Image 1: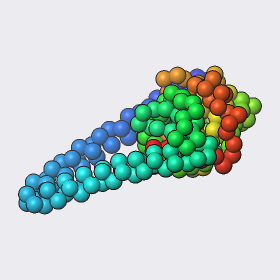
Image 2: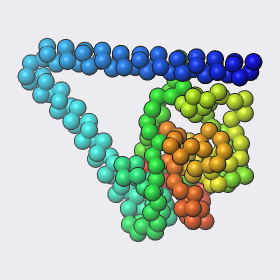
Image 3: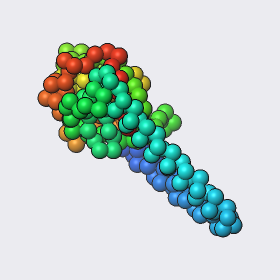
Length: 219
């Protein structure tokens, strides 16, 4: 009976996710049609100005990322630098790179179930280490992780080892973790959206150099 109920709930959950994805695709199609209609009604000068604004916004984002890289290089204190474009995490002191670790970047995605959804973004900017977790620490994962994986949300969403043998929590809630052996994140093909996953051995190797309050640069 319980198996049938869980199967039914999972089927309903998958159906809801499929309907929401269809809704998003429909909205995107309508946005594109509306954008095309508006552009068709613009003069050549107006289209040129609109394109220039979009280009300027993209250029501004690139400038901000470059400034972030330079700010990290100018930081004489020990710090972490995370390149979400090149997919690595580095332990740096100023411009000196002490260790480079390959990283897997969790995607930006809208998560949750309608109407309780939220957009999880790839981290950018300067943050600080808030907590250093061990395998014995219990860290509560958000309910949307189970929803994102198509799993039923448990009553208790925290257990030891669910974020690997070691993990870092930064201000703003960004999680830097390693692949666990238990829990909803124990899948090598799945990286928690908006988070960073690095090999457990590399994270253990730099852990003794980390401390609460240490700056972490995401660019």
